[in-house]
Image (cartoon, rainbow, N blue to C red; front, side, top):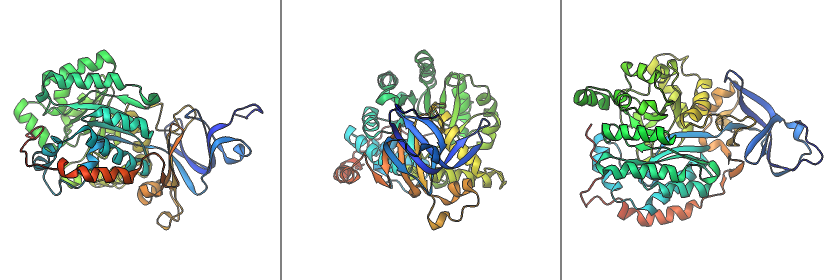
Amino acid sequence: MTPSAVESPAGLIITGCTVLTHDDQEEAVFLEDAAVVVRDGVVAEVTDAASVAGRTADEWIDARGQVALPGLINCHTHAPMAALRGLAEDLPTEAWFNDVVWPVESNLSERDVTLGALLACAEMIRAGVTCFADHYFAMDAVAEVVTACGMRALLGEAYFSSQGPQGREKSLEFALRHRGEAGGRITTALAPHAPYTVDDADLAATAELARAHGLPVHLHAAENRDQTEASLARHGATPVEVLHRTGVLDTDVLIAHGTGIVESDLPLLAHARGRTAVATAPRGYLKFAWPTTTPVRALRDIGVPVGLATDGAASNNSLDVWESMALTSLIQKSTEGDPRWLTSRQALHHATLQSARAVGLEGGIGRIAPGHRADLVLVDLTGPHTQPVHDLAATLVHSARSADVRTTVVDGRVLMRDRRLLVIDVAEVVRELDERLPALVDRGHGRRIQEYDT
């Protein structure tokens, strides 16, 4: 494209950087000394730096020494649980839920959810995350935070069958009311918690609602091998088989974790009628000492995309998708006994295109390409820990860190520039959250919102 004399200024021009793009085969291609031109929140051009010399823009970023990547996507988290970071440590899964998290969550107010979500969004923006898939309670508050801070999100109001039909109805009402908000930055899903807390009747009803309203389903399933074995013992079916028989696999479904997916589940996932994806959050699996991890290679072989995730900060302590990318590569190598799998370029594919597919936004995000939303980050590789660069993909996955992200852009809006967060007052959030913590973490009441007994 050659600018005309009457062409209006671009919204944003980023120049002098190396840009990660993808060719027609979805292979990563690094364009050096490149420029990205953004208009109306959309990437208009990816070109060479010389071609933008002399152009005008509302905002101009000189990104020499930096790499422009598609913004990272956190494909499964519970953003408000940032308020519970470090509260339930060194516990097995059942005690983590029953003794700490579910008693504390019975105290949650909407303001607690707001503050936790603000803290989480600040952390994610600083770590180069531009979009997240959230599954929690009081999600009206999270939608308000997303709208205000400029991020992109797939949001779902979680529910249990113990809530009665009101839980499912509230999840639907939330999804319909907020779908397309924030200028399209908010998409929504139905969010049953899991097959062990949502019965078959509710799952079947959810699947019918998803089909009727064109909504995806986001839930936990086959989180670990114990859940799969318990489901087989009690119901004669794995959690994935439950999703199949209730019709959930006939919808577009995002399955969180899936470390309990077994070989007999693979044909069901391969032939699911809807778009099926899995989100993997490896740090938490290590922390809980789960014996298996998400079977990324087996899922790849049947065409199921695996997106990167962190889960909530109460279990993971971090919302750092950059760390998830490196851990996914390393753990897959160890699990498969094969250093040739998962390569750095494959890890970048999971972090970009596969994560965009997982949250149902392929074609809109996950690439830096004309026509895609301008969700991107600039990463500084001038530090000693990233030099010299022999293999740029390996440097990004295994040497760079989230703290190397200098600038974060969503929909063409700069949310962080040169490590300065522009959209959230973190000090004020922390101050108010600290005041509320004693009431939030009190467990003396003896209540819990649910029982973990798989």
